[in-house]
Length: 162
Image (cartoon, rainbow, N blue to C red; front, side, top):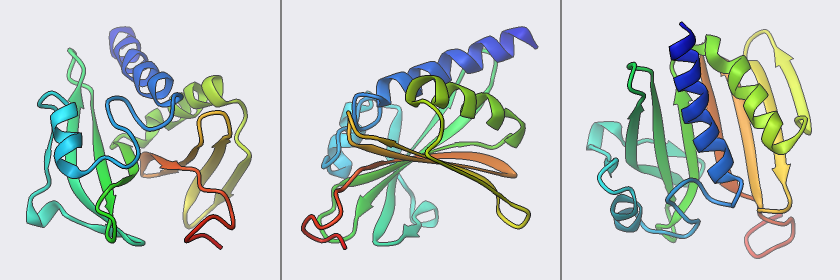
């Protein structure tokens, strides 16, 4: 059990600390699908037709799976803007929702307390962080599974924003 937690925290430390420099791991905002796949060194691959999904103007077009040496897994989805076809969101999913408290703690260690935190009996817990230094907007949702999304933080009033 300790090995599993240590491995999990190691992977989480890598995902949270590297994303603190804007973007996520080997990706940069504005990359296209092929650039993300090449930058992943074989970890990410193009989503199959049945894996593609849509999220408010974006399409999931690349996916990756990560596994620690002891078998712990989490999934990464890369979403690309439908108009410009460039990376605009990265979604990390831990299928085991019980790990979410550890994920929240690790994100708070990196970004500080959530700017918004709420609990809804129908939608679970939601936390939000705005990283002004690196221009990332993070949302963590705990409802059955643990989902952490990274998006480029756009200023209100900028071209295309309200």
